Image (cartoon, rainbow, N blue to C red; front, side, top):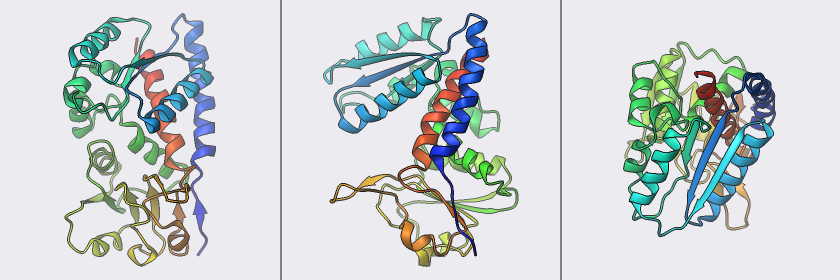
Length: 281
């Protein structure tokens, strides 16, 4: 059985060229897509993510606004700034980088973003729209995963899909997107009994747990497509996913690497959502 690496870097590059072309066409009409990114505090990982998002935005020809805010910023002050951005006609997408400092309520902050500018797709209005099959914005990571399945022409309709991880950011919206594409979906979590009994049934296995290399070859159905959403830094400084790549590649038919898999696609889908927000005007 042949094995295929689903190259997120290559796919992201291809999609970003399309985004840049559509952005240029919009700019000619006098509309420059604008993304505002709010970073509260100095979390090192968040700083890296934000820097990559702003760089990608600028490379696509979009307007980017990065605001670094102090860790002791009050919730009222943050909500006031979001309200101002909601009213700013030059800003089409607003992203508040998570996690936030503990004194800030993430739910309240996200709900303060206007749904039509919620390019992360986390607002209750957008989550509800996704639930009924009429998404305004698809959450970026699951959206990227679907694009990766699409890139290898995988026949999702009728496939058995298993998701390990039930977060609002990845697991739940991933399930909704796969359901809408015609898959039969199972969501597993930390309390699932006999996890491998479920994962070994999966034609499509999506893993987003934050636990390094937890999925091994004996837990994967021969020929399965494996999407590894996790990214973990090991003691030696190297990055790895939630799937043991070296063992699973001997069983799977296709798999995303870490790094270079889902990560670049997440940022790409953020750009696409921002572009689509601007195009709706």
